[in-house]
Length: 49
Image 1 (tube, helix red, strand yellow):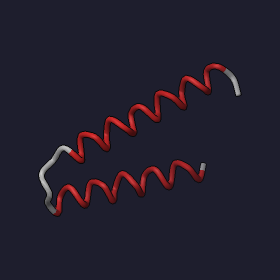
Image 2 (cartoon, one colour; image 1 turned 30 degrees about the vertical axis):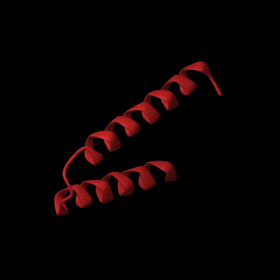
Image 3 (cartoon, rainbow, N blue to C red; image 1 turned 120 degrees about the vertical axis):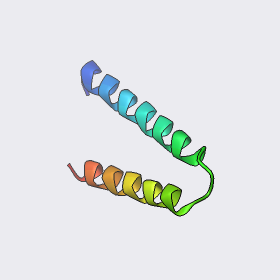
Image 4 (cartoon, helix red, strand yellow; image 1 turned 180 degrees about the vertical axis):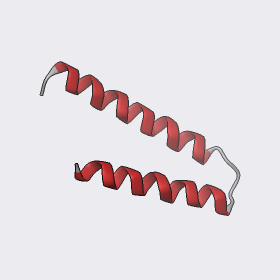
């Protein structure tokens, strides 16, 4: 793994953690649950490539 790929992976992981932290900071609601579902779906599709 090149250093550039490592940096990209770290950046993606940090962005993912930040996204989930922002979603989890929202009050419980259907919108929050839908955002989590969309984020997980996007993450799953991204892992297939």
